[in-house]
Image (tube, rainbow, N blue to C red; front, side, top):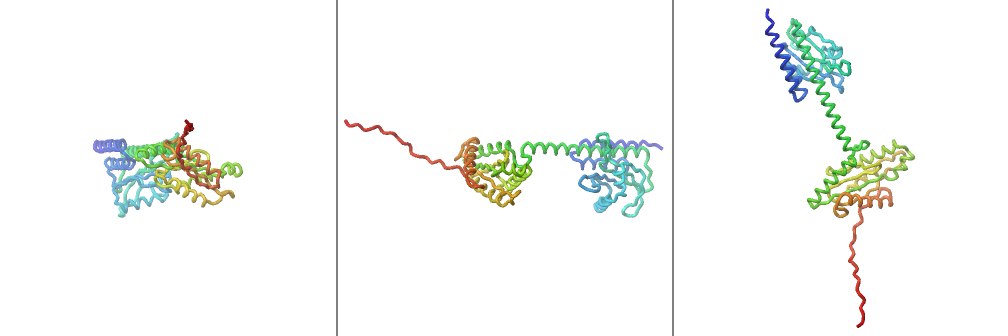
Length: 352
């Protein structure tokens, strides 16, 4: 009996599986392609791939063939049983090519279940399992088994590649976030705030509008650090940061620019109003280690108090310095500049 037909089907199926994994834009498409290729090569009645999920106790259905949605949902629930063949293949990392079973309609079938294995650091790791079923009786030839083993390897490769890509993307996002945020509070860092301030000033300059800049300083922070320790000091900073983030408008930017210093960039002239809202939130904080948490704030507005970032920051710092000399939790705006008429000298009148 010639085996050319089945061999051609197997090769064609494997080629289709390789192509699916190579060109797929996402993991779901890749695994669906592997299952479709397996159906083409081996003609099973049902087929499925399950994946391990670190956040779940049981396997998760990733691809399925030959089952209506209710039956697929039942299959997905059944893998919670440790004795389920998909679960056994993943946990034992051993292939079972001849396992009897019963279909939902009561007919007998013969199933084959293989783990999805990759090597990591010289250790084999199971990423899930693949299974196919045929009406019983059904004997898999050595070529069939080799084909199914190759399909399991391709599925494992697709899963491993997707997870590596996801990890790389998460790392990239983490580094990007770390480049723009303060690690202790999660607020924007000084570099990011400086860039946003420049952009807001440029926009306001074009539109003839205003930008408020508020600087905040935690009152008696050094004393808190010295008497209660840095852990309490860090807790104070995180609480202040949380109030800042919750109190500002969506258009505002808040950041930590060093030590116990925070900054608010607020488009428009509402800096003082937003700063007082922040103060109200800070006052509502419970005492920490027996100390009430308060902050002082200095507010400056572009272009009245400064026509560029340097002069605006200097004006806000001057206002903050005056706030520090007053009562704890003060908000001070820049003092308006009053213009006086120039005094002109007159020449003495001499009598002729």
